[in-house]
Image (cartoon, rainbow, N blue to C red; front, side, top):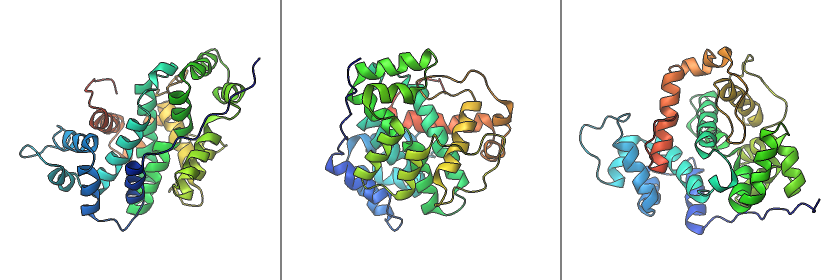
Length: 282
């Protein structure tokens, strides 16, 4: 068997790096977010799609990025920008055999569940959302960088092999460890970096409760979010859960977000706004 080939750390283009720094700044103004959106046509399109969607119910068509930012509010715009940046950075993962739609449902669902655990602190909520969204960053980067090799990981996982074992065999590192290295390279907050590296560590299951995603325990809330998402029947793009868990659908976090239907609608809203495809698959 050939020796594993380590992946290269992806480098963010300078405009995207600046955008992430603004997003992680709790003191950034609405004008700062507007400048980021207006400076990138794909972000402008995402904001306009979101602001004009049925879920947003605009009283009149939103035609400019600045109007869309005001209509959606800073929290939703931060989430949309973060999601759009990452999706555009790793837009070619299907060649690796990954179910991209499933993976993005998984990531966005985890992001929303992490956010709600953070409570009313807007800065903590943004960090929590980002941790949920980026926890499989290493998988995205591996799949985009070496699709032929990662297809072997997917094939092994679907045959019952732990995906991380297959990743280490083929890349010399698993996606959690690699994701942590990427977060460090991109100077993301420590809470996001720790959650990304530790999201497969033992933690709370779907039948246990975590009241908040505390900065000192970022991976704990993420572990709970991943358990709930799996219990809803949503896989990670590599392998789907063997069965659903009724406890997930009735979990207080899902109930607090309006129940399964509203939760899935929120995931669909983010997916369609940040990708431009309007398929009813969530």
